Length: 233
Image 1 (tube, rainbow, N blue to C red):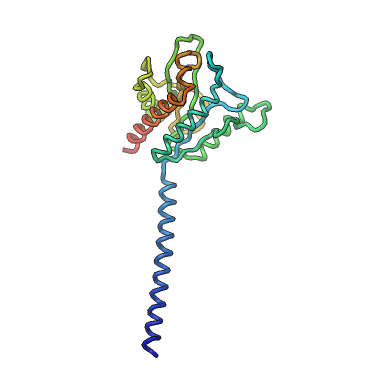
Image 2: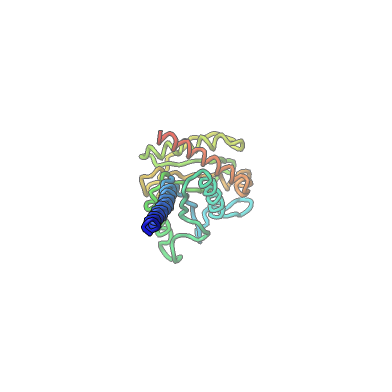
């Protein structure tokens, strides 16, 4: 009787230990997975304009800048996520961020973008835009940074260098200083990427295609990774 009792107790004790160990493994896996997800570097992608603010318009197609910005930003998000980053979009839809389209909508829109950026605590911020100039021969991608931010300058230079390497690049340019709200609203490394000129028919013909948008996104990702690799070395 005592023999069976002792073995039954031992068996019960082993079952309890097994259950505890199993529970611990599940908890450890969950915690490890959560830690892995939260440790990913955060990238904020800001699709310029939106809603009633369409930005500039293509001279040939009449395509709104805001639509191109959104399309390219979504492709850019896919590229960054495939590379292991966690991406936050300031404007994930066609709508603006201003609420009601009343007086002061532009300021409300910009303030909301700034709020999203600050709350995200990003490794970098990329604002996507399209350019326009009175001289229609002007073309090519240009990257802007805040003069007082050395990290933003380095990020801008790395992205500009990557864009300059594209086969479609007709003229290599340097990253430029810019005094814009999205560059000034935080101290995180931030750039504005003007992907091309909608005032130029050749640039416009490229920018409205998904294939070229994917090439632009790949170049931006390459430059961003180059910056982060150097910054964390």
